[in-house]
Amino acid sequence: MAYTQFLRAADLLVRTGRELPAIPHESRKVLLDQKVTGVVEAQAGVAVLGPPAITARARDVLEQSLGLEKLALPRAVLRSAVSALEAHWCPRNAESCEDPHHGSAFVALQLLVEWGGLDDDERWEQLDFLQFTLQESRSLTTEQIDQVLDVAKSVVCWDRMMGGWVRDPLLERFQAVRDEFADAACGARGSLVV
Image (cartoon, rainbow, N blue to C red):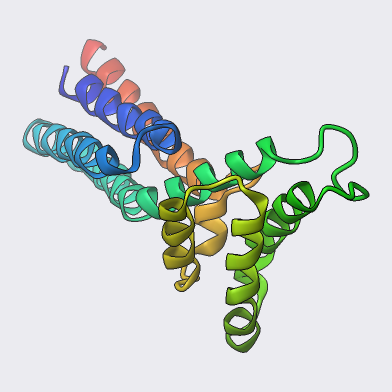
């Protein structure tokens, strides 16, 4: 029972992390804190009841969960911005569109995708241009632009915050650790039956 509750709490945290970009900014932190607290409490139950091999795997899942929590809010800001920018692309060909708002949305998104790969000097030189393209795209509110710029000033873990369209390394790592725990928990449960 403790193993199942722990997995449910961890899965709920991941689901919430995926849904955060669609949730109003002011509600994100409270919701995230609730889900992380659920994972911590459920892990404590596993730590009390589980054998060392299971508790070690549970600690790994907890560590990944805390890593998700650390990146979830800035990740939500970026994911929300990416969705808004994509929604304001030209419905035909974004690269050759002559509408300045569509073009700005396309350029702003390209900048965000490449942001983590820029060196520090390039990033500071491009910060005003990023702000300009975000404003010109008319995709985001002033508050959302400020949030994106705040996140853009710190590029630590940029690739994990941005994720990808095909692969998402942050969630892939979480899933691998979660699956290891689930396999160990099922194996322990099966050995009790024998």
